[in-house]
Length: 450
Image (spheres, helix red, strand yellow):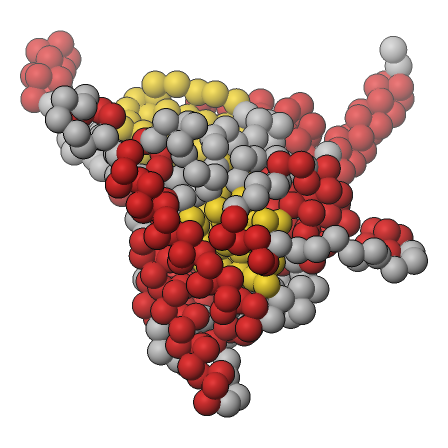
């Protein structure tokens, strides 16, 4: 083969790789990025650990052995040991056994330096067990074009909603984090997050209750899968009263069957519905509130009375309803004390926090200020063109950057119609069950263009 042919072939391969890097970054990573990253990691591992100061003084017996064998008392410092390496479709996972004297926080502080030393897009550190951490490296920006993993969440109330920046799915598990708060400005992706949540909940054995005081413009398309829907503050007031009544009935059922009679095995005694036999367990309820501010705003004295009653019922649900399978998913543009009495008390009960792009730093503080200050900074740095990107945090202080896939209103409405037969009937909420309506001519085509 002539030199000109080899040169032309090299140029073609280079061009194809550059195109693949832009169009199919996962394929480029598998072909080029992964081998290059493995080479950089293993060829410079000890030097990188020493440069990042992830070392400890060698033990006395190594110093003694070195002196006996060579006459030199200088032994090499201890570094974390590689205990496993696993390639992924988006990066690389490295399991490290820390040397005695190192803590996971030391590795976290050096994460940015390790990222640059090994030439990867991002690097995240997670503690697996005492003395063992996992470095999760990503080779490209997985949030640029969100591709959800094939393996979805497994659990009675687990929903894969978005993709994390480390390549793993972001799972909304109501048994783990019962209540959530989603904040964000207009066009930030807040509604997209709720759509993905409803799309994931539709196939599950769960009752969905909607409160959309914008006359139902956001949630009405999902009516076939909704057990109840309120589209005005007056309807929301009655629906919250009905939910509290349902909660009290469930507590009575739980007290009756929780198994505290003499002779009952200890493992059969329960304080929530998930410990009840399946035939006695009531259907879980997820309450989706589209714009929380609409429940707080008032213009007349009568509105103030209604607002106080609704806020009281919401706080009761947030404090008590987890045990009987009623969960709150609250969305809003802002949610602070300026909304009125009870706002702060309610927000404190909403453990799961997701904050999209905000118009001001104070909104990010409302959602993430009590989680982590770094999360607040990250939320205020989200670019307007990155709609759907958000910062997710919880009460443990941990946080991560996530992004929801683009999902149309019509796509979610289709899923809701497909699983309409799973919509449970709850007698206490029958008065608020959405009635089927005849769509206007051309409605299907209009929805597909939204």
